[in-house]
Length: 457
Picture 1 (spheres, rainbow, N blue to C red):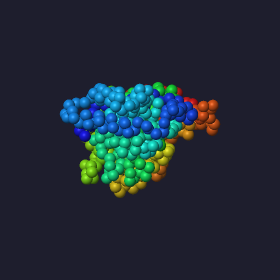
Picture 2: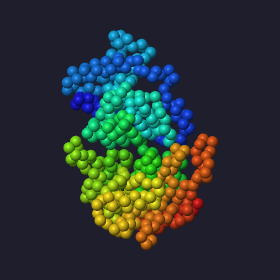
Picture 3: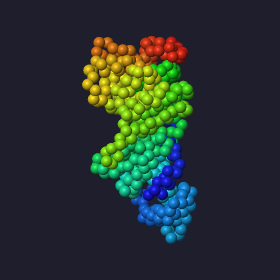
Picture 4: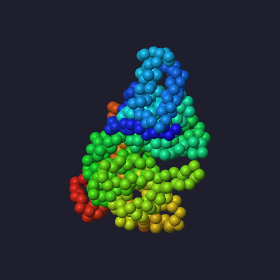
């Protein structure tokens, strides 16, 4: 087993999701994903592939401690495929070779999907149903695993790369691929449809700010303002639903941080991709099989405060660590960034209040809201619309308290006209509300220039 793990560790990093493209209609996506019409439902070479696979593994084990690289596997497999003993027609040999090679050193049937730059997400619902997301649309592919055991072998290969383990006693797991793509696994008995794997892909080259404008996620004035907010050390929350693009936007915002600042990132599974030199990446650790040894996001936030950070970036707050994050924002760690699951800026405030209560501290609601109003400067609402596009639908400033209520004012919003164009995309525009933010004083105080024209429609 150790030999196979060493081989897996040498696997090249799979290509990430490339630059996002404009959403396409579902029929086009189907055409790009489906294989040729001649593809057979039943794999006629299943038994032969299983035999060759076992032979290759046996030969690898005979090598003992000698390092076996992908080139060696390639050579051994090529000899087997072209051996007349197996009676594989020449026309089918390249396909059988590719499938076997992916099974041994890659991700099996989904290797092609992982390597492709077309898909932003891969969803495996048991061995017979593999979906992809392309341009915001979900499409069923014709990729299949032989059986649940085949799928579990691929799952074990993925999670073992980051020292994780999944079995019936620990049936849920978060992991990542070598390129940073996030992987979530849940297996029976919790899943009734067989092992379920969700892969959120991330490119080697993060999406840039100008690309977000090109894709229609926000406009130039909004981008200028957000850049000034980050450089001006405002505390920012990116709010949105699952798959709305929160992490992508967080990466873009993080790129505005100056090179001379010390940045500490804290995540369940490392996703934030920073290009600055002085970055410390911390990752939470789940409990072991005995239920011990867990290191939570809250533990890491507390520890980060002792690491002399200029910026603290928490990939997502979802529980008791929210209180520690607010305290960090209120005690001199300006410019902190995080994301939260919520459907609107007002909902995100309510979510923060709820998660602070989960910390176990018996704080009155008024005190919690005072903390929230003092700590958070800006809430950016990111949404995935029904046409598959992702947009910044609102940028709101937290301006203080009015009685017992946290007061906010909207600076930018996205408005739709209620109908779609010929390609099925909503027709709408980004609009400045005309409100001049109170936070401009803090931004200018940190030496960042602001143009008042940004806030005129």
